[in-house]
Image 1 (cartoon, rainbow, N blue to C red):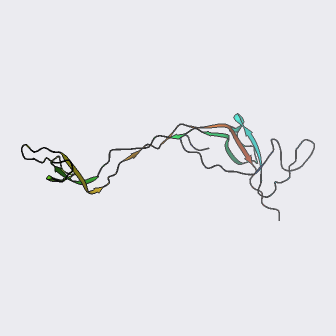
Image 2 (tube, rainbow, N blue to C red):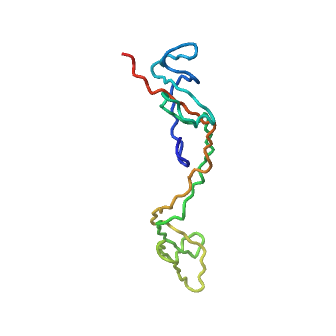
Length: 171
């Protein structure tokens, strides 16, 4: 079982033969006798619920704990991005005295790294149109945040397998 607050490990599947009360050795009327498990299987005793916390019996020392059911109710929090930093651009703005933008009266290059700028038009001249042309652009970056797990993983029905250590294959 992982420590509190740690993610669950990837599930493991183990082939077991489950005997509640069995012993290896001499068979008689008082003892249930079990043959060694086939290759790839383990001989284990299983305990559920409150019994899953008990110590393994002598000779069944290979202990595996987990749960019969896990419900993952976690979701990710919303991902966000802070204010952009390091972005720059430069724009050329032209002022016109007519709506068709053919009678240019002033032009100004505005880099984003400088403060506001103004263009003085002659007295009595009205501004009827303007254009803006992007001359350069460098994207900035933003500090990402969010995307953390929110919620809990519910573990239900604890289970413990107490297994006999793997037997050496017969010669």
